[in-house]
Image (cartoon, rainbow, N blue to C red; front, side, top):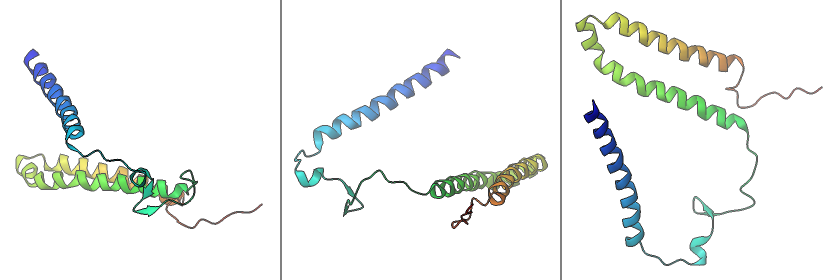
Length: 129
């Protein structure tokens, strides 16, 4: 058991050494010729206009989070689909199908909740008093 922890420690140390070694080697190899043009702030090659501290609509953030949730769902479903036939042949197919169904049902409930709250609408109606 102690051997397993030693392997994890060795891999962690090697990973950290690899990261810092790469950064150190890069600092020696890359050219160092700063000038004022290179020090300017830019966004996608365009010169910046105005302050970077602006308010943006929180709906963009919410839509991005919802996308990430369902993107992760799709990423987690592909490996399950790849081995589902093996599970069926080994007799665990019904249990796996129930787990997949529960997973999709929980995510569908979350989508329904967001839909009912109308958080997926881009243009919301402003209610005036």
